[in-house]
Length: 362
Image 1 (cartoon, rainbow, N blue to C red):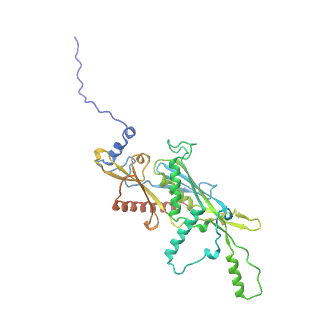
Image 2 (cartoon, rainbow, N blue to C red):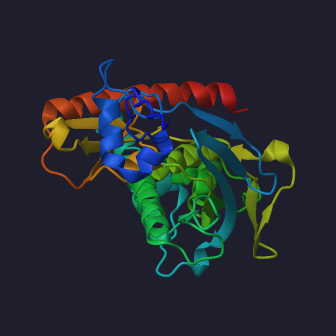
Image 3 (cartoon, rainbow, N blue to C red):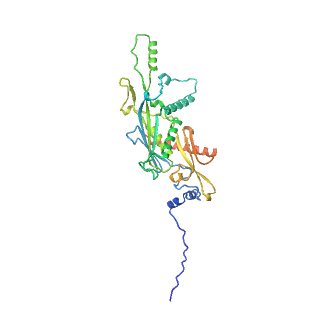
């Protein structure tokens, strides 16, 4: 006698996927599901939309460079080295030597703030004209699957290098006084005339002093690993490396017609930075159909989020929350209220970075 099989009473379960598989199959839906969760908007990394990754910094790790730093933001790690080389003034085409009396000229009618601002602008213009700052960013280090080692410079690497160069010149970060190498002739032998004539003679000798050479700063930025937001990480590493840079004492030898440098570290001089412009980048993510066109502003995007945001904003903030630069690409118009909120977040990022520099740099 045949026995009938008992029908199963268990309900079938829908197919399930691991989180990383879901993220690869439907990235926008995966991110939207996190941002529309019942517990509040949360990103796959566990951060809130406006929360940025806390950077870490280690300075002076490269012994062959005049300044260096290694910065890590999440899974993005960057190493920056600053190396100074000497450029003789006679090798610069159409260079007009600057005398000491012109260098030390003071306009008493100008307000102090206006005078400092004018000096910063003139320094940046002269450094840009002479090409004293040469940044080079390298992504072909195997830092990510899309940047294999040994390949030519990618479009992203060239774009980032140009953005960094523009920021160096527009932010008035460095003083050209630290990059000039002066030649001051020895004072003339003392004469038997009066003291007034001797003072006039000394002024004439000082007026003959001129710039004989410049320091050219070659800034090499290499990515060890890349997980989104390369511009912010590169700029943070650059700022830390410049703050760590010490240039040897250099002077012009008139007998040899050469510029000589001291090998005594105690005689080296640290670069003077006018400000500490810190960037913070944002992405605007538009949800899928279920989110009904809602938008979220994501601070300090990782690699997964960058591929889903069509609108990017970078705000560079200096001292006292002064907006140094704003860059925006893609998307439509952006409201003033939202922009003020982003500036406030960028100011918080700068304060955090200042504290990290004070605690992490020698």
